[in-house]
Length: 380
Image 1 (cartoon, helix red, strand yellow):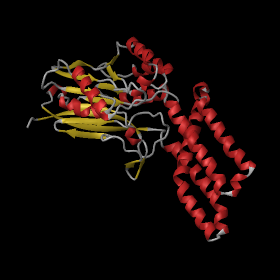
Image 2 (tube, rainbow, N blue to C red; image 1 turned 90 degrees about the vertical axis):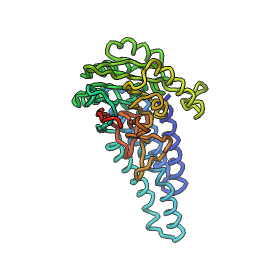
Image 3 (cartoon, rainbow, N blue to C red; image 1 turned 180 degrees about the vertical axis):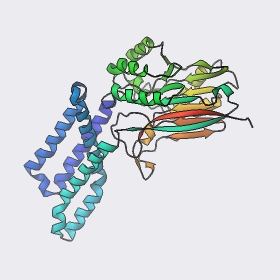
């Protein structure tokens, strides 16, 4: 599902640029130019399609796909400026300028794609946050939680890359690892992914929840394999567990992703709110007022329901931090809680930009692992 979601727009963007070039410049109408553009485009998309079967050549195919997607996206963004310059040059009969514009345009978008292919998705960062909770039990002071969200094991992130993330988390010496949904895009890779997760050295069991990509995939298989690894990994679906550290108890609540039963994954806002309210009622059942509660939700909109039920901290992902930003602003701003730490009264939310991606392109939003350290402060 997610592969088609990004593969189809790439073909559309390629078609837009493939039409723009010959319509704008005569040199692009030659058989040689036509064959070169569409030949390269076909090769890239076939390589992209074949990534799971390419073995040792898969990293090259991934890089090629990222470079092409970055190039055609850059080409679309540069389309209007270059069209205006071209129109100006023709009106003023500036033949020398017109002659260089096609080469300049192609060079610019290919260079942008090349730069993005090496910088946008290659590495990840560790973002650390400290959350001060009034009345936090002394034995939980300094408790460290790693949020590993939106891994998206599939065509562009594999178990080997996940292993890099787990090694980094192990080096951070955290107490608890939580996986806040969208671990898996390709269910055939989930067993290897579980084995990598189990390399975590945290003293407590890993706690995971589901995201929309698990729900859109082979969910029965995913649930079966989670169950097979339940001795080390706990999957929470609208329920809670408790862990103890010395004399203190931390309750961990995990909720399901509210899928749209009519197709797609986005529920209309009123229906989403109703679903999240019902999930909160189920998941927080039996928890006492004043208990120390960590809530896990793939969708950050659950924050207000978690806060209303007494959760001091909610960890989420889903947004990818907007994934593409210009001048500090996301190109698509669809979420009120996009990335980072937020506060609502005495309750906090931290949204991860995600460790992976299904759209293999990021700009000014690096992949990340989030480490949250709990600190106590006196009640007011």
